[in-house]
Length: 385
Image (cartoon, rainbow, N blue to C red; front, side, top):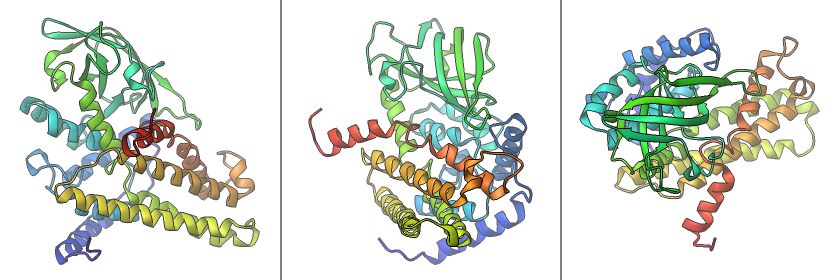
């Protein structure tokens, strides 16, 4: 792997930096886990779309730029350096979009991708159920075909963005007599459809980033089936690969957090407990190591390789690194870090506390780290069950 950027890549970086300098909002947007903040972030997605920055790795025919993964990593570095807003449509852009490009029909691509990339339709992920979280194959929510429609009954939970989103993609049991990975289908459905009830779930910070979805004879047209009926598990695993692998959590996110952690340490160094300096340094090294590993993986993919079960190692690494950095920050903040979010603490402390609370979910979402370790043990190391 050549660690030097080409002239074309350096020019691309300058183009990105120039656009962000002119277009990133001067005032910080409200959280997209609030109704008002959600719409603010939808408008940001629209602004990105106007500059053709929403999904740069997508084909040009769908509104992308046909960029390779190295260019995407450069884009992400500049995105975070510019303190750009979070991506409210990440479920659509980074997970469903690539899935539709690979498995969707021409009609599905024409219908959904333009609305997705423009920010007009924001997507939720609807996989988990009350008794089927990390063990997703245990799901029971049924979608039974009746003529040209699927009739859905059951419940989904921990559906990210569902409180305010427009559409969702989910995995359902289309063969009521099937078990585990068999008889599952991947469906797209509008969240305002008759027979669908949304019940928001409050997070630790009180905001509503997730929701339960209840289905009572909800009807979804057959043309919203992605792939073939019964092939839902393999399609979902492809989507999960995008989630655990490169696209959902770029290294730039953790490099920025590491830099902020260093600045916090330098401001709090006098009162820092023994050994914390070495931990901060290790976090910085880990963030850079993750970045280099991601560049290596991107080069492998560009040259025809594939991401396999090693996506599980990526997921464990970035989620535990994120937790470690935020735990160190809370420790450095001392009293401010233990008071919770209120008007008496600094804006910097508020951001670290919010980040800490979110980091607690990292080892759980996208497949718990316990499950990822099982995958590594069985599929990579060949250990017995």
